[in-house]
Amino acid sequence: HREGLALLTNLLAIPVPMIAAVNGPALIHAELAVLCDIVLASETAEFADLAHVPGGAVPGDGVHTVWPMLLGPNRGRYFLLTGERIGAAEAKQLGVVGEVLPAAELLPRAQALGAQLAKLPLPVLRYTRQVLVHDLRCRMMNGLGSGLAHEALASLTAAAFVAPPAA
Image 1 (cartoon, helix red, strand yellow):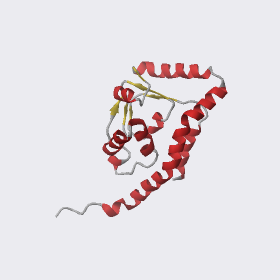
Image 2 (cartoon, one colour):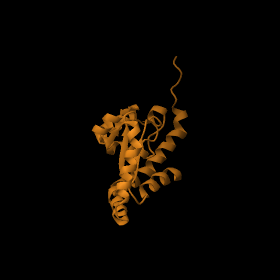
Image 3 (cartoon, one colour):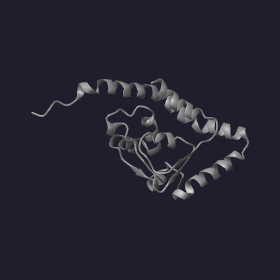
Image 4 (cartoon, one colour):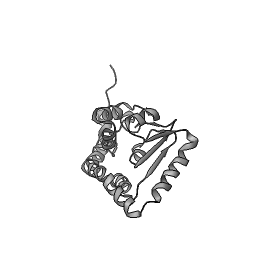
């Protein structure tokens, strides 16, 4: 519980804009990449949450907040409940990523954007980051603690709810 809170709290407390370059499948904890301020993806990137419902766990460690926020409530719930995989092109159409690039261009583009941002005055970067993640931080603080508790409770009690053998 403490580590789950710290991970996302610390990620959202990074004081300058963050850039993610997703080069291939992000199928477990893809929310860490899409929580960045700029998200770039290679053409082979895909996003899913296979660690939770498809794997028999409650999606309470932040994914329950991030994906419905990014995809919309209904699509976000569908995504989490089904283990749906979203390819790079669709992720761009949905607004999950900003650009889709050939793999060879991904890191150079991320570095170029980083260099562009690094030219700005540090107070501009820091205060921009603060205003851009404010809503995310509020959402996480409202739902992360109870989500982690539900995830833990389900993992502790799941064995009691295993279906009886077929007669």
